[in-house]
Amino acid sequence: MMTTLQIVLAIVGVVLIAIIVIYNLLQERRFRKEAEKMFSHRREDVMLGESVRTESSNRRAETHIHLTDEASPAPEVQHVVDEADAPLPSMDAMRQPASASILSAIESIGPSLSDEVFTSRPTVTVDSAEPKAAPRPQPAVKPIQQPIRKPVAAPQLTPQSAAAASPARAQPTDAAVDAKQPGASNLDAATEYIARLKFVAPTMANFGPLLATLRRIGKPVRAFGRRADGAWEALSSHPRSAFDQVEFGLQLADRSGALSQDHLDAFSRALYEFAAEEGGAVSCPDKQEALDRARDLDLFCMDVDVLIGLNVVSADSRPFTSEAMHGLALEAGLSLEPAGSFHARDAFGHTLFTLANQGEEPFPRDGRGLTTHGVTLLFDVPRVADGLAVFDRMTQLGFDLAARLEGRLVDDNSRAVSEESLNRDRARLMAFYQRMEARAIPAGGERSLRLFV
Image 1 (cartoon, rainbow, N blue to C red):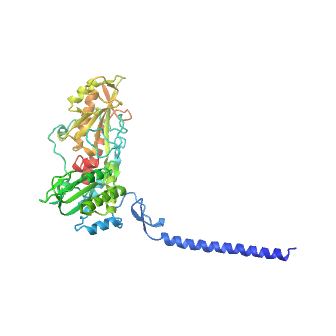
Image 2: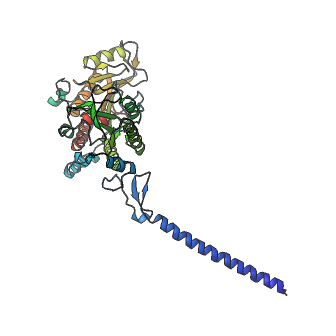
């Protein structure tokens, strides 16, 4: 028998449990409402740089960057645009999108061709004596990962091929770059984020510290000042002319990747601080638009950033001597660079292709004392104009070396090249160049030489 005290305690316990359960239900309901209220609005994703919703059903599955997504300008950008009296025009007008028919025709070629023979790499560079905008990882001196395959019989050089060896080849130009508006600087709105610094009167300032700061950002920077006579000149650390306006261009992409929010913030912050000291006003385009364009440009550059190569290897374990290689390379018009590789150059000094030792040791300057079991010919596709002619010239040299050194011309899998593979690779190379022309970034042109460094 339960006593009265036990019954009372049992009732109190049940009541307390019921109160706790009800309290927890009420708290859970209140927190759910607050959470729904907090996450139901649109907000900026700082990692993606675009507006997103928390509901997964409203997200779009995208495989590439869209340039039509709208985003509110950053507060500092709006402040500067309001402050400057002449905001920069929209840079989308400078872009020259390829027509759908051209791109579809090019894409129809690409998938049918071998992927083994081209090495797409956004960060791999060819050994070159030309200066770089920023340090980048260098490939090891060894056979490339996916060299292109060549025919067993030496190809017949076309008139276009013969032109590759001629010093009279014209330098390629970019239509958008050539068609600049009168009175505009030499900056390129299609590939650079352009900020304007304007003074009330022509000013001769010390731009040295500012230029040094901008070059440490990690992306190539160019700057031009407008003199009192309206002419533009490249900005130096200690200019001899007074400028009423200076334009700074931060490149949207290079082989290290696309422009980032950090790059833009450091760029604009340096300009604001300089303007505050010198009494100028800064005007900057929309940052989010620039980031979208930088991603789009970087994706395109990654698709066409290709290194082509072929290997000449010794047969029957008989190595090549550096004396023989030195003589044949010089005879073919190549020059030995300080880094220890041979370069074929055009009339403007641009590298067409290189010849390097597959081993770690570079070719000696005097051409003596080195033996090797293979050499590699390399061709940097987007940096070379008239690429099909250079392709034929490099192929011919590869066959000449193989024949005269009693070696073999092979791909990275040690397979002899064939006529069929040559035709296939040449067609794919043509497709790459067509895509670059359609994007108004012709291979070997002024834009390409800036983008692919």
